Image (cartoon, rainbow, N blue to C red):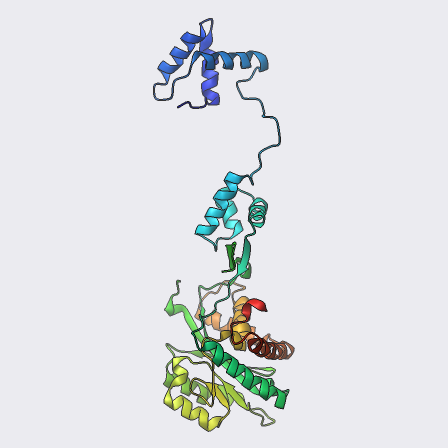
Length: 347
């Protein structure tokens, strides 16, 4: 099998040529390089003729269009790399491959690959769409009876924030041709909060793992007392999801006392549909918004993280919260329209 001569090897042949025949030059060169495929006298003849004609041992540029970096061979390699690691950013791929980000994007666009934004949704069980539709129909009826009903609900939820966490929306992409952890618990800040009309309830910080007794104490000592206003108003309806701490008998008894017949949750007067974060304002808006703001700077420690969370909540305007309420109403309507299926991908 032949092997192309390197520039250095070509220069060597010219230097040893002298007045000898091409046969002798080839034999001499092959003796110097016993591990490479041997060259023939014809190779020597062509190389010396090129040198006499051009003064160079290099090949002349080939005619025709210059080969581009987005050729078939490179395209296959790029697509294979993204198939193996679809969450890799084009910036990182460019650094690793030496191909410009512009060329990478051109290859991906040519083959109709798109940067899908990740939506973390739980898989729906067989009867979940019916339960989601039933809840949405109930909400629609309440809104028909009272157009201001959304602003009278206290939506609640919990989330974890991490000292070493970060949010970069531009990097949360999954490259594909079809629409498709690490955490140190000692540096975790469990957070609970709520949205009530134009008001943020909390945030309140959780010490350790949240259980039913701790959740009940949080509601009794912190969450509900914080909602009392000078005008004496209070939420008319309370919403929580089906997390285990919410399902404790003592928790449900307490909610029956505080909101008789007017709370939603697992086995509540209004059954909350499981696996429905797309219907909870804290999931589809608040937590992602807070994390974007909180992680805008490098977090030093747990105390710094808590201060960032408090400041981020304080920076949310009443107008924005009203828009979130309107978004919830839109999602209720879409859930009915799409027979209880997840609706994040169509928003």
